[in-house]
Length: 471
Image 1 (tube, rainbow, N blue to C red):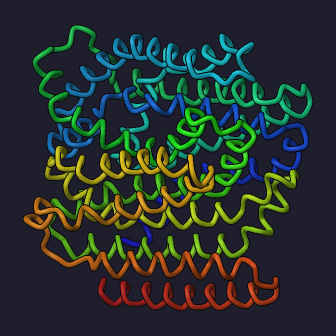
Image 2: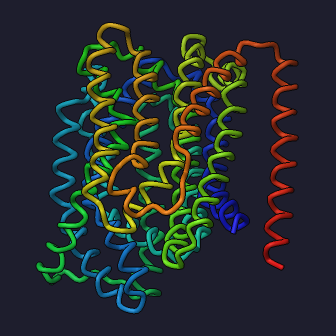
Image 3: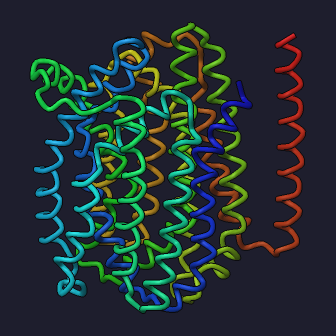
């Protein structure tokens, strides 16, 4: 069980992260050719694109997942109709995205407005729904390698193009947009043959409107739920733009996410790995198995984020060869530790989604996102862009733990998950990491060694316990 959790998380997370890690080591090469303005422009455009990204599939992922598990031998009929509907829907969606980008592109990049819009829209129009359906199939079939290898290759292509466009051709922020566009198209197109020919999941364009409408009634309430990810992870840059924060400071904040983005991606990968396993446990009514998966994953996250945080000063000094940008490491610690919310979030919210209580998710995820947005609007104006890191931490903690206190969850819960304990331990580790980051290298080395030894001993004992149970 745990072997599958770690191996699938590693494949979903670490395999694609090979390219991202390589990309991090490429930063010393490309940051010599980038300014705060470049980071700022890219951060703002990414925030704008993210503001409507959730509309690309209208939350229909939950229908794809539920039909796959609950109608194992009839799901293809449903998936083909959704596939056809999404292809048609992506045309008006692209117009929405393009229009939004046009009005919010920073002044410093106004002369590149049309290329920026096209580079963001073209991948969606060409193969967007194909990638959605294809990746979903492999994830639910627990074939993570198919998704991971595509992500890894796409990432490596992006890195190579970044070095070419930014370092060699000195294209600045436009190098990022060109690299992402090309690699995204190649990645998405790779799903077309296996999806349409091998699996026979061709789109049905004369789909039954009644089925699509009934599906949307279930999926649309999840749109605000998924939109919360944008409100929590990316909207702060857009708020800074609206409040008049200069593009250079936005660039510093964007740099603070350099390592945190990797942790966030690992959290997404863990969700892809643990989701099907939790669904299987719920079907078999193995509640203890589900809780153990959550607890083990939470401990792993604590180990990873704490270790990264105490060394973040040195990591930033090595990776970001820009003195002003590398000083953003204190904010990076707050953001990294905030992503510890993820495992406990799975425990409550995956249970609610499995029971199709999608509307109640708004009380958790959407409220967390709106709360973060309002706090940013209030605090950034008076305390500067640094306040966004702390509002993100508070909002993510709410999103991770609020679900356990909902009456709808309590009605279907059978075991205690001790959310208060995990919440306070997260806050404690964050404060400890913020203190330890300023210690000498030798003291931090000793702390890391102790954490590593304790982790390995705990893992060995856990494996031994699992083997005894299997006998």
